[in-house]
Amino acid sequence: MYDKYSLKAEEFINHEEILKTLEYAEKNKNNKELINQILEKARPVYNGKSVSCAGLDHREASVLLACKDNELIEKMYALAQEIKQAFYGNRIVMFAPLYLSNYCVNSCVYCPYHIKNKHIARKKLTQEEIKKEVIALQDMGHKRLAIESGEDPVNNPIEYILESIKTIYSIKHKNGAIRRVNVNIAATTEENYKKLKDAGIGTYILFQETYHKESYEKLHPAGPKHNYAYHTEAMDRAMNAGIDDVGLGVLFGLELYKYEFAGLLMHAEHLEAVHGVGPHTISVPRVKRADDIDPNVFDNGIDDDTFSKITACIRIAVPYTGMIISTRENESCRNKLLKLGVSQISGGSRTSVGGYSEKDRPHETEQFDVSDQRELDEVVRWLMKLGYIPSFCTACYREGRTGDRFMSLCKTGQIQNCCHPNALMTLKEFLEDYASPETAKIGNELITKELENIPNPKTRAIAKEYIENIHNGKRDFRF
Image (cartoon, rainbow, N blue to C red; front, side, top):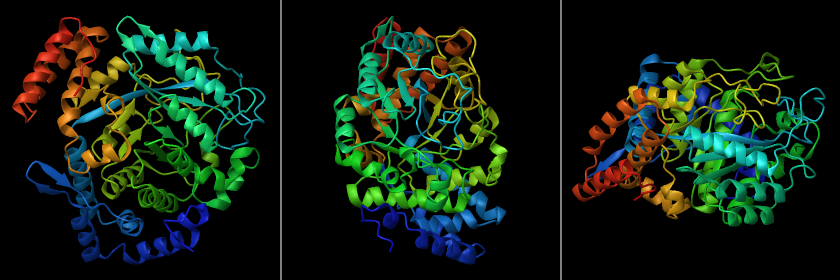
């Protein structure tokens, strides 16, 4: 029985409800009147300086996803772009993954870290090695990391993760500092989530991989991750433990994408219903080639056009949620998805353990092939040429604007009063400390232009003063 308020995985992600949803969507995929009604419901409502959005439930959004009418699809794309602009403006948040260890006891068939892979080099960073990685990331200009680790209670216990977080936050190198550590580790206990909360993490991220229970169990034949319910209910334990911000995601290509899409939105609805706040982020990775992994083995792969439609429909359905696209995708694909709702991207990423402190990109411990191998400076320059503001801001997290407090600001559009000037100030830090001359020139021209787009005269004047102070050597201003 489907019940979004239930705490049981098979009730808030209900197989029968998803099948009924897909049947309903297929039946109505050519119903132009209904589709236009759904699009109208999702359209932003502007009231003076504030803006609100109704969003969509999983059935309504699934109808949009099933639609194949090109004219209506273009309407979807335009709406997704409008919604993204209304709540996130032209800011794109920058981050990098940091792989701590690839020791893992699971048997996930899509991941090269699976326990049966005997020829991959196993590696776990010491705290000294973590320092070297963090300094290398700081020297690139990063301020926000997402730490990654395989599941191994002996090699990667929670104590190791906590110690690593403490090490990361402790490193101040030149003008560099990691101001937010997001954590992407295996499902764990409520007690351990409380420890992560106390350690000062930002967002707790856990990809579901697939919401199809039967497929999930086949894809995870052995190891603790085999337990579908324990994995799927992890976000409830994390939020019960006080972690305000959680990030969802599925690995598109493992199961039929329409099924995954409905399950993902049902999970978001469940979190909103039970905890009063939905996911802080949603990631949309696709299966990619890696050591011992051939993506062609999975017969549910999606092409770029389908991927674009999925992204747009997620943006329309959950308008306030940050959307993440990683360096799994190439420059062309990322360019297209940025227009359709993506608000966070990684840059200069290396998916190998210890990869950043190496001069040449190592491949022997990579979790997946990196399609976009440009350095961070190149990605920042590219974004600015496209008209975006690369943001290294972590102010909301550090000012306590997380969870429902962040969403209450976001849902009225008021978050932009903080985010726009904060993005410009953190970009200015990057330009002063790390950028190439060409990137600095483009960036300073962008900042001068964008300062005038801050609507509040007082805020604009303060932001200009702060940016001048940054130019003169001071750091870490925020609204």
